[in-house]
Length: 308
Image 1: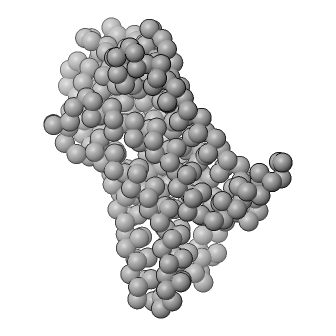
Image 2: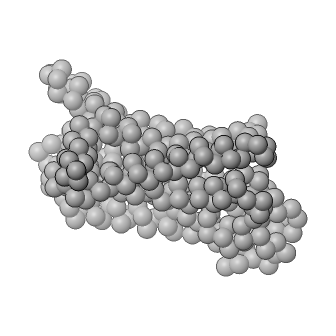
Image 3: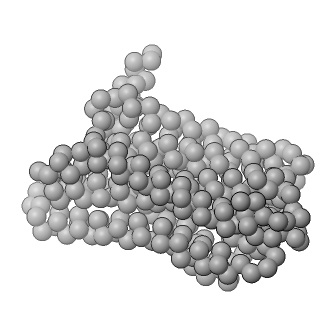
C-alpha cells in the first residue's frame, strides 16, 4: 500500500501562520470540540437509554451523532496540538490514515442523510406501512450498508493516494490531510486520482443529495395535495425542518470543495470551507435537533432530572 517516495512526513501549515492568533484559536476550537462531543454524546446517550426514542428516526439520529463526534475527532485534536506546537508534522502513514477516516466518515454521513430523508418520506407519505417498511432489521441493514460503503469508498482514495510519489515539497496548505492538497504535492501523473475524486466522490455526495431532494419533493407534494389540516401540515413540515437544515449545512461546503471546478478557489477559501464542514456543522447538528425537536428535548430533560 505504501508508495515509493522520499517523503516520510508532511508539514501541516494549519489555519493561519500568524503566531499571536494560535493560542486564541486553540481556545476557540477546543471549546467548539467540547460542545460537539458533549452535545452529540448527550443525544446518543438519550437515544440509547430512552425507550420513547427507540424508533427508526432516532436510531438514525444516534448514528448521525456518533458520526459527528468521530468526524471532528479525525481532524480537530491534531489541529489543536499544532496550535501549541512548533513541530507541526504528521507521518506519511498518519496522513493517509487521517485521509481515510475523513472520507470514510464524511461519505457515510452523506448516505445517512439520504436514509434519514427516506425515513421521513415513508413516515409521512406511507404511514400505514411505516412499521412494515422501516422495521428494526431493515434499519440495521441500511446502517451497516452505508457504513461499509463509506469505508470502501475511503479505502479506494487512501490506497490510490498512498501509491503516488512525493519527491518535492512536503508542506500541506491545510490543517489536515485531504486528497486535493496531497495531489498538489505529488510528482507524476495524477489524472486517475483526480478523476476518482470528482467522479466517485461526486457520485457518493450528489447521489444521496439527489435522493434527499427527491424524498422532500414527494413529501411536499403529498402534504399539499393530501393533507387538508393546517396543524398536521405544520407538524409534518416542522419534523422535516431539522433534517433539511442539517442537509444544507453539510452539502453546501462539500459541493463547494469537491464538486465545483478547482480554478478560482484560493487556499484561504478552502480552509474556511473545510472548517465549516469539519468543525461548525457537527457542533450545530445537536443544537438544531434539540431546539426543533420536542421529543429529544424532553428526553434530555428527563435524563438530567434522573441524574440530579
